[in-house]
Length: 305
Image (cartoon, rainbow, N blue to C red; front, side):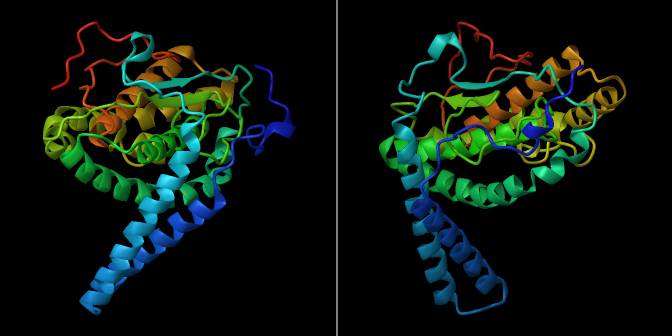
């Protein structure tokens, strides 16, 4: 295959939508305060001081996440609660770059380190927002739209980095630093639900999702493996497939389409499961390995458990 021009290596997506710097700083401050509270508890520090830090940190995380999410509402593609296009309401897609270089995958994990640092911070905020949203859903039956957009944005960012680096290695185009939509070849979207079940929030993440969690753990090595590190830590089917793909690419310059389709299917199953366990939808994920770059139409009967 032809090689990608060297000028594209390590370059961000053209003109990505920038995140609000003030809200991002508020979120980071909240994460640091929450982390400080854990340190106080671990070192047997004053309980009241630890609780004060935790409360302040949680509040700042929610405030920052809500502000970042509101900035995404105007450009969001999740305006409806239905399943757009007849697909499952969480859609993961990725277009394989036909001009991948043989050797670029050897250094992508290094080039992606800035993303890993940011995503580590966003991951803490993701967990806090999910818990807070769960409480709100329990009493109101609604996931606040701004927090919903933030959560989906974090998952979208994770997916772009996974597609670039160790999760798929499907493009040499450097991911943008944004929660928003871009023209990047890897996309992720979840339709916003107008109403969610009050009681399912108590059992979705651990009981109802258990069959999917076991399958995803077997396929990827963990529920977040495909988005954090490509599932390459430890033994997993996804990690093995990505490694085989990398070796073939190195020696032949060809990314096998069959392997790409299978890798996409595993990632798609993982992200659907994360969508459900993160309380974003009540629609139960299908037990299907939907392969290929585009999310295929779901089966007509998609009842929520």
